[in-house]
Length: 110
Image (tube, rainbow, N blue to C red; front, side, top):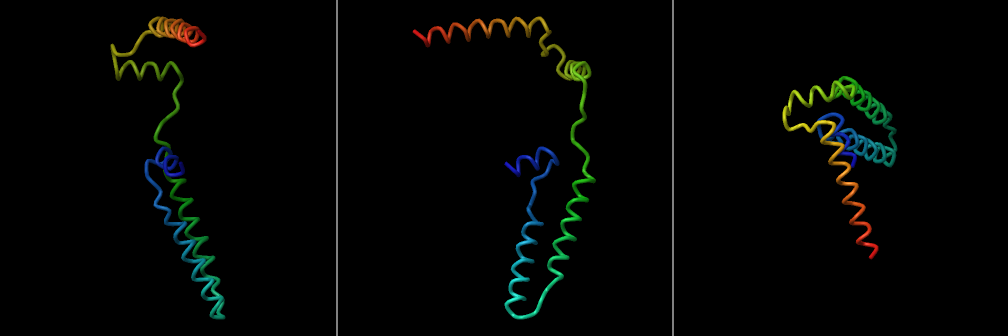
């Protein structure tokens, strides 16, 4: 789900490089502590990478612009022309669907 959200929002699958770097830094720090030397730069490296990742996301602009229903309708009709149903056709289809779904429900009860 995370990758799907990343692709939807930013148009790119996240390679999780930052997470791998965090893991490697944690392992390096653990090894350094075991050997008796303290490695504080691992934490600094992780913070630096996180700030770079945050800047990358801030620089990316949204893929879509928000439109009002009337603007969206005009754009949709300009793109798809006669393939866009009118409001009356949509209402008729909705009414037919509701009528048919009511019949299906009553048949299931029998």
